[in-house]
Structure formats: C-alpha cells, structure tokens
Image (tube, rainbow, N blue to C red; front, side, top):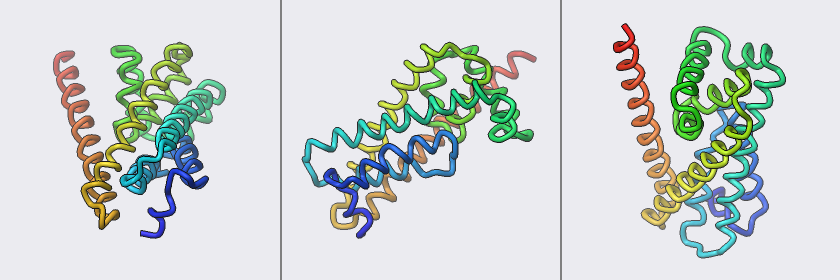
Length: 201
C-alpha cells in the first residue's frame, strides 16, 4: 500500500520508473516493466492531475529507447548479442520466428511483438542482426511504445478505480487482464504459425 501511494504524478520516483523500467526490459526481459506501468496507473487512478499524461509519455519514451537500444546492440555487436540473448535451441527458434515474421509482416510484427512474451527482445535484436531498415524500425517502435504505454497505464487506472479501497486488488486485476491479453495474442501467433507450417508441407 505504501509503495503504491508513493507513485504519484508529483513524484520523481514515478517518472524514473516510467522511463527506466521499460527501457531495461528490452535487454533484460525479467524486468517487470508492464507491472511497473500498471502500478503507476493504479496509484494515480483517483487523480486528475494533468501530469499523468507526462507519466504515460515517459513510459512510451522508455519503451522506445529500450527497443532502439536493443536494435543497436544487435547491429553493432551481432555475434555477442546472439550468444547473450538468443543462445540455445529456444533462442534459435525465437530468432527464426522473428526473421520469418519480419519478412512476412514487416513493421506490423514489430508493433505486435511488444505484447508477446519474449517477442520484444527477439524481434528488436533480430532487426539489428539482419540490418532491418532503420527508419521503418524507428516508426514501428514509436507506434508500439505509445500503444503499449497507453494500454498498460490505463489498464492500471481501470483496476485502481474498480478497487479504490484495495489498490493491491486493482493491481492484481489489471495485471491478470494484461496476462490474458498476452496469452491470447501468443495463442493466435502459434495457431497462425502451425497453419503456415502445414500449408508449406
């Protein structure tokens, strides 16, 4: 409770969290950036402070910076990036999926990957590794960052309003809802991939 109440629109900590967590999440997927932005939404659910828009903008900026840092790491340090982030059979599968999806859908997959567990790192790094057009990448990541920041923050706001007296329940409800959305997107991706594999055989 005390942690959530400290995350207000007039708190420097809130802005630091909004920028830093989404930026780090691109390189270290274990960083709970979505949970952090949802928590900011829950904490400010009862406020009409206009600086709330700045919090959302900071979250979008952090996400954008993280995606582009991931691209640069893949572009400048290809072999190291591949060993560090896409090693092993699972990493190879993720890179193969990312490259196939980029060839087929281009910018669309860069936007959608933000909502797929593990997809953001695989796609943004792969874009750097294969030299995906930088201008198109910047545009796609800017769009993805804004959509994601609005989605996570306002999911938190809705949860916070639904459970005004119990903000932790609001946080859990909003986080649960985003997990369901991510699971549905991942399920749709897997089904589409299997259908494509069958069609190719």
